[in-house]
Each structure stands twice: as structure tokens, then as C-alpha cells.
Length: 112
Image (tube, rainbow, N blue to C red; front, side, top):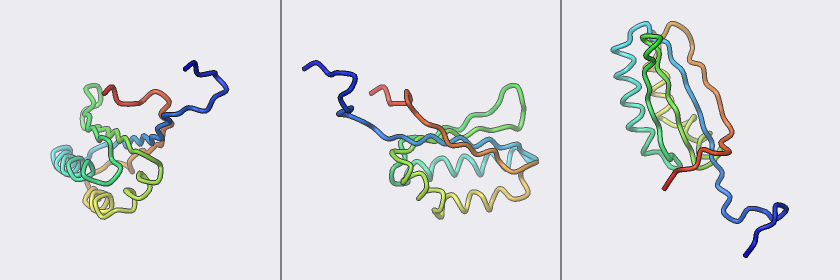
């Protein structure tokens, strides 16, 4: 079957991507908090993946990249016990509030 450009996609996947950038006042303690969060967030309904990255050019700066099945799953997670616990535990460990951004994901589909 030939699909025309005007035909609606048949395998549309709604993805929601979130990034959170943290600047640590206490890097070791923050890394422990974020590592625990990654493990727990990956078990949340609708979570496709969470990656934790450490900056090589800005020591003490960490980036979380989260991929969610839908914006609904992502929003539910932001109100979850896991997210609230992580945010509360970060108090006193950061030099500034985290930078949080929501991204459209036109080409962020999984390879498999």
C-alpha cells in the first residue's frame, strides 16, 4: 500500500521528552539523589527511559533526559511521590533551581 502525504499516520506515537539540568553545590550528595531518582522514575507508568548525564565541561552540572509515552504520563509523574521526594531531597544541594524544559519529539523514537 502506498501512503500519501495527506494520509494520517497509522503508527503515530506520542512522546514527551523532559530535560532537567542541575547545578550542584554538593556534587556527591546530588549525584546520589539523582541516581536513586533515575532508578525509581524508570519504574513509573509510561516511562520509556531516564538518562543521567554529567557534564565534562562544567563539573558539578548534571542533566536528566526523560522519555515518556505521553504528556499525560509525564505530567502524572511530575506529581508523583518519586518526583516530589527527589525535589525535596535536592534542597540545599543546588546552587540554583533546576532548569526544566519540555521538548517535542519528532525523531526521538526508539530504534528497536
